[in-house]
Length: 312
Image 1 (spheres, rainbow, N blue to C red):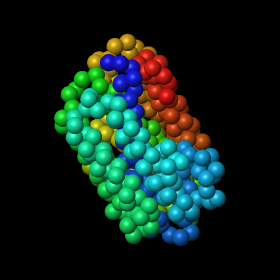
Image 2 (image 1 turned 135 degrees about the horizontal axis):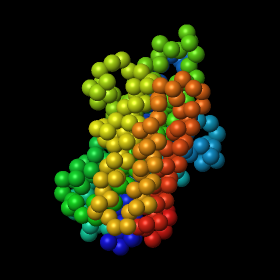
Image 3 (image 1 turned 120 degrees about the vertical axis):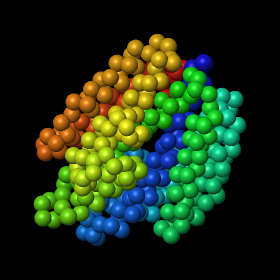
């Protein structure tokens, strides 16, 4: 397979996954604001921190109000990671690799892209926003449904899987990094009764609440949530599952020793982490998240150097 095609399939998977995750984040954050007391000032700026776009956002907007953050993440063309921009980029990539995917993929991408284009600016207010975001999530899931049901499991499909899973692992660690930092700031006797609500929002940001309850069968708590979202080998949005899925694609790809080493280093970091101790020690958990992020960056670099024409 040409390196250009492999790279395009990889980034197509990442951008579609990014659009879905951004829609989920916005929806869950709105619900969280309703569940918490007014004195709990998580606000909307945490979403900008999660997507790692603080500097760009500040250059475009005066403050992180609900209206500004929602517009920036939903429809702002100046934000390359907004739902609209992510779907636009995925659609442009798909133009160049349409012959490698089922024809229905193009139709499903057009359906959700033009829906966002036509309805986005009219769905920024709270009332219509939830339905819009749910439709955005459903549209991206339809794309995955077409691909997983109808696309041959050839080399191209493996690069698509790699892109989707590395993007999901990246988002999971970002959510844990930012959300957990705010949770660690809770003072005893202050907002501790609402701690479980915040941990539940972490799970719901990743559509993980029901599966967590099935696996854990205990009240939602910090160590349990972290263990589930980092180390669980069965949940598709956990970091360990994503890395294992990427590793499973490698037998179909040539010359992958450097990539194998990058995956194994990051998996070992997650597998050996004592999350109870990290939660109890100030500064340790954010450091672990940073190290995992660095590992994912090294994995992307190894993929780009081995298979792609350029390090995008």
